[in-house]
Every structure is written in structure tokens, then in C-alpha cells.
Image (cartoon, rainbow, N blue to C red; front, side, top):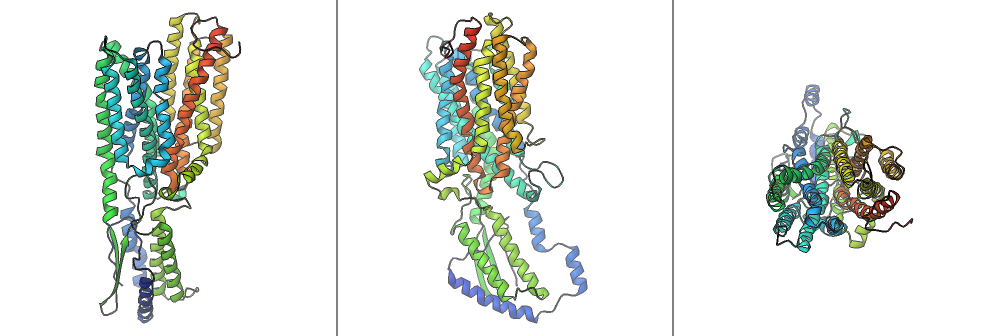
Length: 558
């Protein structure tokens, strides 16, 4: 039997003619039975040689399982930095955009993105990563251009600037949801290629195998807070540039954002897609005289469009092909007398069929997960709700830490009745907090939390909110050593973020990981919006307690 295959990582036989081909294959297998009965058993020296040298199939698998050559971690780090830097630059410019309505800037920077993340489960699989990241790059450039144009002295328009901020919100949310899913896709590919399936969340060598790209993206988003504020402060206060010129220069970030994706990730995805779309699997069966008996061909099972849509098949669905492959396997076993007694030749043939079946299963990574593109809107909503074990901790930790920033930390200063002192503590606390976020979001390849620890961290963050509120009201611990706690707040917040997405990529079936990663990201946006409103009342109550004027809301406890 001579077999010719295309150079493809995963391959499976696909019948286009239905039962007719099955009957033809059965007859061919009968011919193979006769050939196998006439063949002699291999000699001892041949068996030793086979044991010492890997088979052709094993060599092919070793070559196919080599890790991707592209530097996957660095591009995701850069994209994480640039994706969130636009949001941070807008927040840093909030008072310049609207002196008396900074809350409007905060709402404009979050609310539009919420609708993107809420709708993502229903259209992300229909739009490729290339288009999503391209649109995101255009939105980022439009954001900086629009705010810059309408921020000039004598020609400013708050409405148009808020519209520009909304464009950054759309870009940031679509980029985060898309890049988290894409990072999970790369991590799954690396996990498979490194052979860490049986190692759980850690490889067999004890080193962390999963989460390299998710951690890199999370780390980039963590440093974005420091970078965004530093960029605005350095250009406007150190170099003395206007806000307009500062934002115009930031358009270069949008260009770099697209180029990073296009140069390092898009070309790699499209290369795989082209290979998957064109790769044909062909098997030719000859008789003992060298005459061609039959030829069967099919396509590989791959996600060939780069949309994060799970498994896509050119002809039949995965269940049909696996069912067909499985039935062939059972027929072959029965015809070979798979009853515990075999000749050496039949064992080898059965192993070949078993290998093909195993490759087919591995290629589409069913893991009993649903096929996302085939789900209705209601089914997608129900599937999204099953991700609550990851959404609740993300929502809680974001709600607690942003309530700290928007409410509690605004009412702390040494002395508290000094506006300058309060502003100074608020600035220092946010810088220290961002450092903590960056460190913990970068820790995914060093430490990956269990589900128990993942749920414990948001509870500790709520305790931090209560503790800081108590300190702001009573002044029991009232000096700059509080910055240690601010750093701790950042560690918890960043830790929940990176470990939430790492747990998704470790716990859920491969067929729904991309869907889950993009869907769960809506939880942190809900947490931020909730904290913005709650923070107004926390601030008003603490201002009232400390005899400070200027609160925009009425304390509900008064």
C-alpha cells in the first residue's frame, strides 16, 4: 500500500460520494486482507530496526508538531500596550477635554465599548481578525484626530471631543475582546505543538506551558496605564507641547498598532488559512502488481478563516466526518479479525487506521464543545451565561478597585482639607496602583492561580475597599505608607485579570475558548461602569464626613 499525503499538520479522509465510496473501500480492504495473509512476518533484525528508527508517520508528526517560528509573545505585548494606551491617554486628558464634566469623559470612554462587548458573541465569528483589527486601528486614529482637532483654543467643541473619546472606547473594547481570543488561539496552538496535553496547566517538565500569549497581552495592557499617563505628562508638561499636537503625534500609535498585527500575526494566520483551504489529502491504494485500485481525497479539518469561529469544514461537518471515520475504523477492525489475535501485518494496518482516526479527533479538537458558527442567538446567550464562574470575579474586582479610584482615593490627602494634597495623593496612588497591575498581569507564566485563589482575590479587593473607606473617614492610618496598600490593590486587580483568562484557556473545551475569551471580557466593563456610579456616592459621603465641598452627588446616608 503506497500512501501520498499533502504537507498538512492534521488530515482526515473525506468521502464525497457517500455510501458508494464506503462499499468501494470495503472491497479494497478485502483485497488488502488477502495481501496481508500472503505477506510474511518481519524478521527480528527488521523489527529491531523499526524500534530504533521512527516510522515515516512519526517523523512527519515530529516535524508537524514543531512550535511556530513567529515571535508570538512580543507582538501580543505591543498590541496590549497600544490597545489600552488610547483609553489611558483620553483619561489623562479628561480635565483638558471638559474641566467641569470629567465624569462625561469617563462615561464616553467606557459605555460605547460595553455595547461592542455585549454584541461580540453574535458577530465576531463572522468578521475576521484582520478586519476587526483594521477597523480598530482606524477608530484609534479617528479618536486622536477628532479630539485633537476640536481641542484647539478658540475652536474647541466638547461634544465633538466626547465623540472622539467614544471612538477610542469602541476601539479598545473590540481590540481587547479580539486580541484575548487570538492570544488564546495561539496559546492553544503552542500547547498542542509542544505536546503539553497531558501536563495540565503545566507541562510534564514542570515548567508552565500555557498562557504565554495571554500573559504577554495582559502584561502589555498592564504597562499601558503607566505609559499613557507618562506620554501625556512628558509631552505636555516637560516638552511644553499643546494637547492638540500631543494627540496628533499619537496617531502614530494607530499605525504601529495595525503594522504590528499585520507584520507578525496576520501573515501567519493567512498562511495557515491558505494552506488549509488548498491542502488536499489523497490516498492511493495499489495491488501487489502495482496497479492503482482506488484513490480517495478530502480536505483537512481546520479553522481556515482566522475568524475565531471554531471548526470550519469545507464539505461535511466534523461530526459526520468523525462518524464516517469511526465506522471505517470499526469495519476495518472487524474485517481484520480484531478479536485479540492478529498477525503482525494486520496490527500495523490497524495502527495506521487508528492513527488517522486520532489525528482526525485532534485536528478539530471537539472536546465535546459546540460548533459556534452553527449556534443561534439564543444558544449563544445561554452559552455565554455558563461562563459566570469567570465573569463574577472579574466584575467584582473591577467594581471594587475602580470604586476605590473614583470614590475613596479622591477623599484622602495630608491634610485632607487641602485640594493640592488630595490631588497629590490621588496621583501617587494611581501610579503605584498601575505598577502593581503591570507586575501581576505579567506573572501568568510564573504563577497560575487555582479556581479557589481566583475567587478569593476579588473578596480581598472588596475588603480593601471597605478598609480604605474606613481609613478615609476615621484617619486611623493616615500617611503616605498607604501607598503600600495601593500597590497591593493593583496586584489583586491585575492578578484576577490575567488568571481569569488563563483559567478559561485551561478549563474550557478548545472549540469554545476563543468565544469564551471574547465574551467574558464584558464583565470588567460592567464592573467599571458600576464603580463609576457607586464611586460618586462614596466620594460624596466621604466629602461630607471630612467637611469637604465639591461633591456632585448627594450622600444617601445623610
